[in-house]
Length: 327
Image 1 (tube, rainbow, N blue to C red):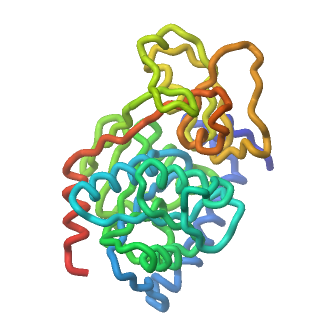
Image 2 (image 1 turned 30 degrees about the vertical axis):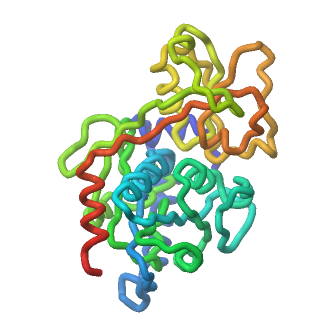
Image 3 (image 1 turned 120 degrees about the vertical axis):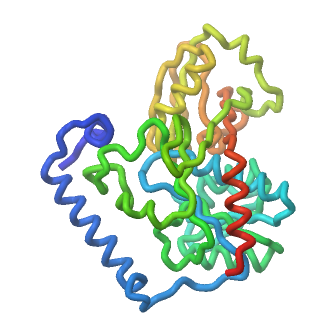
């Protein structure tokens, strides 16, 4: 039965009743998840070995929690400590298959928008592949590395890891606590007991959690390296277009700059090449995210809001300790 995104949001996050068919869907989803993981749980299969330790950055919920900004910040923090850092990702939303290395000529259609964004912002070597172990092996074979960060991959059982980090949305939390499709969870909450680090993006960290904050670094016109004066934008009205997992967070961030926001929520990983740019025909400026902007022509006239993650120093210290532990 079709269900609108608005109703699904009210069920997941606002306490609306869960229809029976979504509850049945959750039972099916949970059963299939256990079936896929059974060989690993019975130790009939084991993770494949890699030459370097792997840090997995993931989340338990669907939608944007901030794991990609955290992965970028972690790359920069570990590099500052002298580590050679690479990144692997599935490359969700790409139109290619197999293992690919991200390079200067790569497009979001070839490697996925998030891996391309990570590569451009962090300057780290990045490989994508449905088989993350194969992607890791390809990357290790090309670039000397000390550690790998996996952007997502908590449920990729073949991938060895020395540390798992779960990013929690500080605003939405875990919603109604149910598995997909009755709730936003990709894995049961009990999965948290097995992770080394929990990071709350926004809000007050709860017991056992570390803090992460997303800060606006700049607002600039696409194709220009010069940031705009944020004071000059106060009181102005703008269209804000967000093809992310949590558009509401984007709208709130732009609104915090004193800008009157006209909201346009698009599906996560929205394909602008397929749909074309929306034309509002009113002369108002258009602002979008870096994840969206990576798929746009630099001369389209839109503005991009640049956001960076600020991490609790204890997070970097804990990750470093995991890297240095004998495997």
